[in-house]
Length: 181
Image (cartoon, rainbow, N blue to C red; front, top):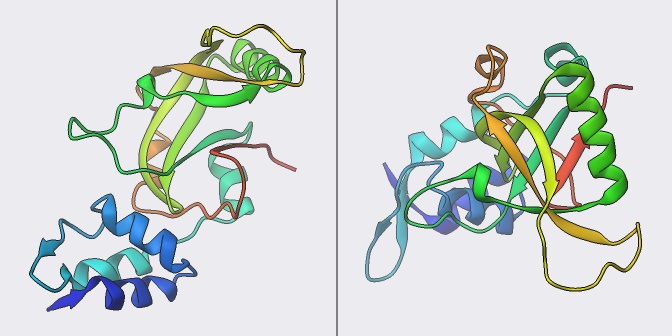
């Protein structure tokens, strides 16, 4: 049954999403393409409710799936018409975090990467390197955040365990390096 974007946002609120995050998930098409009418954007209620039913992974779940950790890329704006290209994206990462990620990759060969929209997993990959992207301004110290890109490879067998799930990360930066406790 078609429902309005407002109704869809209220239903997604049952999964703990704010209206802003619900609208972002809808804008990414996670409940299918919205049908634009004169007065509203309509979504399929069953598709919206299917999003709400996706299991949310806890820290314990993440520790079981990713015993050495995972990089969670939190995507915001809707993708360009060509689609999602994680390898072309950059994140503001400090030099210390880049060093930590590089050491981690050197030790384990790859770092699992989850791309999420409002917590919903939309893509997976494995980072094989992290590099700073030149920005043109002068270096201002080690604490400065600078654009960084990940060299990515296809994800491993672990990706099946996170398909159709949510990884709620709360407020914060556009990425999160999750490490087991």
